[in-house]
Image 1 (tube, rainbow, N blue to C red):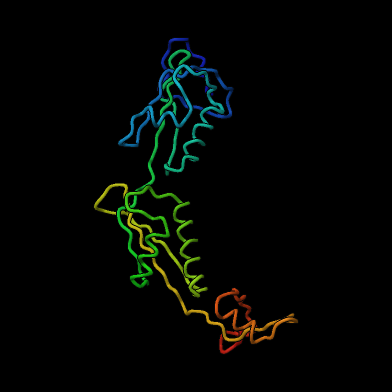
Image 2 (image 1 turned 90 degrees about the vertical axis):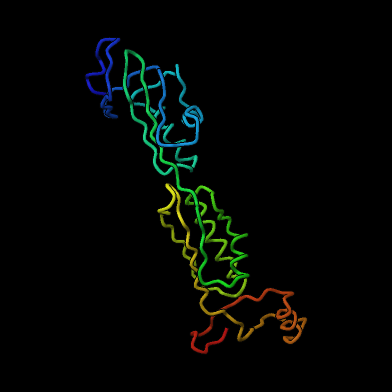
Length: 226
């Protein structure tokens, strides 16, 4: 805290320069301002911080740091800054600056058949109008990869490209680009330890889907066996 914070009790300090290397001072929250987000009441947004008017906090101190962490943990904001607008006597007036994560305005699918695209739309959890988070994109990639793994496309590559929607503020368009590669097929099944049943019976059950085969790569892809 700079030396200016030792000013007379009723002196107003506007935009004080707070240094975490300084000595903390105990102050009372006199009011909280929130900006950067439209469509929500300020008290709803400020409530996430767990800061309340009349609360004693240390400046600098853990209360402000913890408030920033709560906004990040919420997951709906791409930028969070808490500054001090002013200090009047023993009262402090924090200002919370927030930037919302964008919403999805449209989703395009490339490299898929119609039926695959319909499956993607129901399985990935990407919805038009939803707020986009990093976890949502990571989850969608994992689900898409599993979907094609189950269909035999073990080497499928899935990329989700995010681009700004110039027609709508703070909205993005998602391009889901899929390269399925070649489908992996079973060329040879090696059975070990079959003391009770013949190879023929075991292979018959395996190929009918009663037992899930395990793929092992013995040689190169240029005509090698599995």
